[in-house]
Amino acid sequence: MIPISINDFVKKYCKTNPNQNPEQLKKRLQEAVKDKKNGATCSNCGEAIWAVGSAIGYYSCFTCLTGDADSSGDYEIDEVCWF
Ligand SMILES: [Zn+2]
Image (cartoon, rainbow, N blue to C red; front, side, top):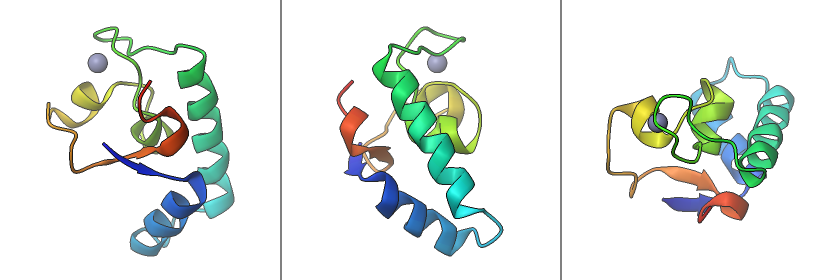
């Protein structure tokens, strides 16, 4: 995954999704990052959650959220990128 800070991701995401409230997204990202650090796992397969996808969608791992096993081109918050 491509490491990105919460602030940079919020900026990037809100540029392409103008309806998204940046403060709300930031809050959800911070929560997802905290939960991932605390060992939150995907309810479907037991893998570590994908913090970015869990903030935007629902708590799940990358593969279950996207149906794609290759995460090399997608972002993850830097502090939990290698969890
Ligand atoms: Zn999963």
